[in-house]
Every structure is written in C-alpha cells, then in structure tokens.
Length: 124
Length: 143
Image (cartoon, rainbow over all chains, first blue to last red; front, top):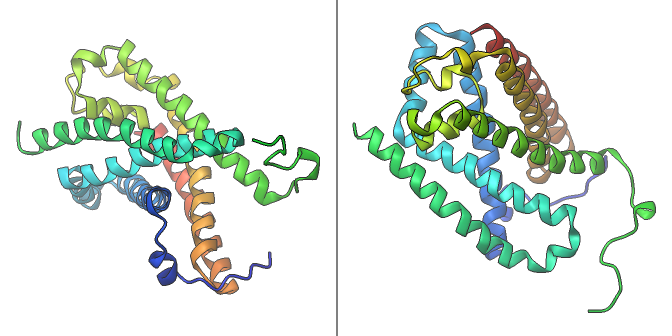
C-alpha cells in the first residue's frame, strides 16, 4: 500500500471537470450523506427513549427529507450508470450521453418526490 | 474505430484486493437494485398503490422495515412485518454496509494525504460500519 499522492482536498475541489466531475462529486456527497444518516438512524432506533424521539423529529422534517432523498436517488441512479459503463467498458464512449440520460431519469423522479414531501411537510 | 481493444485481457490484469473490491462495489450495487425493486414490487402487491404515497413507497423500498410504513394508511401491518421481509431487510442492510465501508475507505484514500491518516480513517470506517451492521440487524429483528 504505497500511494504517492500530493493532491489535498482543497486542490481537488478546485478542479473543474464539468458534467462528469459534477456527478462524481455528487456521488461522493450522496454516499457520505447516506453513511452518516444511516448511522444516526440505526443508533437512534437502537437507543430509543428521548434521544431517539428527538433525532427522529430531526430527520422527519421535510428539509432533511429533501436532502436525504437527493443523496439516495442520485447515488442510486448515478451508481447504475457507473456499474453499467464499468462492466461493459465498450460503452465508455457514450459517457456524456449517459450522464444526460441520467439527469433525464433523475429530475422527474426527484421532482415528484420533492413535491410530495413538501406538500406533506406543509400540512397537506 | 480500430480493432485495438480498449482494455487488457483478464489474464494480464492484476487480480488483487483493490480490484476485487472494485468489482464488489459494482456487483453489490446491482444486488441492491434487485433487492430494492423486489421490495417495491412486494409493496405494490400488498396494496401500496392505494395505501401510501410515492415517498412512503420509496422509503419502504430502500429499507423494507415495518416501522417505515407505520404512519401510512396500511390497514394491517402483519404482512409487512413477516420473517420474509426481515430477511430481505437484513440482506439489504448488510450489502449496503459492506458497499458503504468500501466507499468511505476510497474517499479517505483520495483526500487524506498522509499515510498514517489514511490508515486511521480506514480502520475507523471499517469498525464503524461493521458495528453499525451488527446493531442494525439487531434493531431489525427486535423492533
């Protein structure tokens, strides 16, 4: 395990790679968001009691729901694109089109879900 | 396009741990897709179409645990809390945790420059999500 990397977080974030880079960074944010959320969620259901109820109200708020659903849905759809392209490498030439297709699938699904979440959140 | 292959033949690729984990990440993603679609179809068969909204169906699909449908209009929770769904939920949790551990390790490898720091974060990630999968399975089967 000898890695020689001298690119820190700050310079990694300054890299401008357009569409593919955006999906890459959103994939990481989504993955990290889910890892943190699932940990907190499991712990709060495990602990129960006042702490559990308090944490429950936090992530049942519609703002948090919008955030976590973005993480989950984007990670899932982008992950499917990565999986398909990686397992059939000859498709790699269609990478940009695949990203457009991915947004085309993601936006309507996410839009409907956000609409439902906001309507319920505002007492609909 | 020329006939030159863009990838090395399998015999010339290194078959090491990182490569196996790379493959595992892709295959576990497909497995999670299977389990999520399975849970979604199960929910629709059990009457989700008229008993809950889209967001609730998604919540059930991503983790088919009975507490995720308690707040919906489902008349009887019994079919949603069977051993069958608990097994599905446990499988999904374990696959997701294994996938997540590797994800955290990869992120740490990418952004943490010092070798020592990488090693520390790597072990924290592994211990963290391994204990989460154990606690998670416990929660699934006892609540």
